[in-house]
Length: 491
Image (cartoon, rainbow, N blue to C red; front, side, top):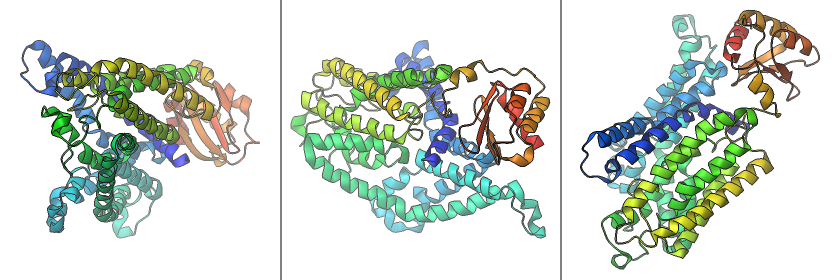
């Protein structure tokens, strides 16, 4: 669990970029819906919309690379950029060795298997990006001080990190060469079975679709239900203008349930997270979650919302996926049918409403209200009941948010402040590790008894807390990075 929480914190750096994507794409699709649905693009308004959509897409389409660097730096000791470089090396090696063209060249039999080919087509995804980030950061933490023989001494220390990351990435690629298509094929087989279960199967599919988002393996199920891998093709047939009379299932069954969840459920959950955020961090939560909710409502892009909490609170993400399954079943039973060519946002709902297979699209209002209320109540209760570390609640072992909010150094000479704090903490021999978050120095010490708390405050810090037997947090304020830099020099 600690590893997941550390990973979740590391992901907050790239996740903080995704709201920009949401705003750009949301405004862009509103100005230029033809970007999503096709058609002529002319006039200043539509061209501006296209410009914004492409700018936002540059981020969402390369989200995996953002995760590579974010995790590589965020999980590396001292947040050193060497971890990010090593992670990028890992990503480039893995995505090259697992590229469809290369894999089919060394294993020609894969080219004859459509499912396995699709598996490697989808390998450049956030899951592989996170793996690359973990490899890069762990190699940094392990080998940053490595001493090589004299004839290789140029590559000692940090220069060796990327080399080791590359070697480990080759080994991981060799494993994934066989494991990835196996997992993908197994999910396609499972999807084939689920497709025979009617309304219940649609709910199970929606649940698994969301649950597998972090791994990228949801593409396996999508190819079963939305496209023509097994002759189903809910999406392709819907947009081809067919009706349920033309196919063997209720057309739109595997898309309709996503609309109330993405358009209304996510905003409800986002508001619950914002309300549960600590008072000193509500602005942070609003910044991340509000634009993510707008993005989900307008164009159905959910990753900015999902990756903001899935690793910080994996149990809550499981509940989130279950809610999708439940609402998909409800949506199917009440007869609401809509489809999407991109995702289940308002833009696609408007355009799909005119297609022959669309039914009772007006019911998005009561279904949406229900989804908003249920998602809000479930998230609000679960976050409070289990003290989940959703955006705006992470890092604080105790509720000192107000103190953080108002924290301000009484001395702007960061070197002097750092030296006095270190002296009050018992000197560098008493420090076993040092890090920092948004407003605090986060330290591990050998002995708590020798710490002079009054001396810490006299140095200019706003306060100090002791969340564990060996843990100390010195509250600095927004200038914490500058104090930390000087603190590390002294260590």
